[in-house]
Image (tube, rainbow, N blue to C red):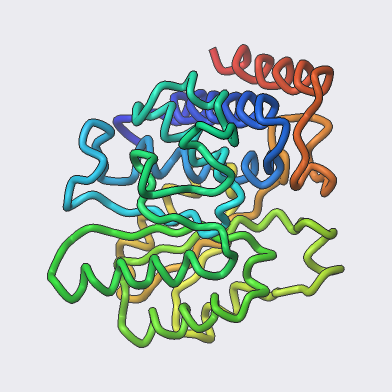
Length: 278
């Protein structure tokens, strides 16, 4: 791992988590659990992997990211703010009436957002379309998308997966944020999409299962994705609510904002992590 060190990525990811908590607490609404679980993936992509320029968000050769699990918008907003697309102070306007940071990503108003998303299952289809366009026109940008594990219960995900493999979209990498919790309980209890890895393989993708909080593992997986001649799926095993003691592996924090006392505990938890990374 060069240029950006692992410790710098860990610090950035912790800052992203602080931004998530700040935004959701200020909004008194939102989805902290699944935002915290994918923070490391987004941090690695935006701080190290992707060809992007915060000063030129629409540059034509930029890599694209589609947050298919659009309810995790607080994570995307926080990583964009911490990466320099807009001021981190704006995170406190999350879901306010006059704010551009609404409950789901809006590509028309937020710099750095490549696709409006939120209807589960549809984001990966948009990512497939972007990757197909790049192949068709000979462009060399890459496309990344992040799905939830519960989202993989949607049939449209598998239509997109089938199409991507049939069109040889080797410029497409999909992360599945596999925290095994969705709004109504565990994925196994609701409508298990597992084995997700075997399903993607059956549809013609190369697949790797990793620890989604391990930056070395994320780096190795993305190196393998670049070397593959197929679309690539990274099943990232994560902890819902990662970094906040009372939120970790707690399905109740899928779509609930912390109150004032809970906010203070969350900030103390993340401050302790920040201190350990000095």
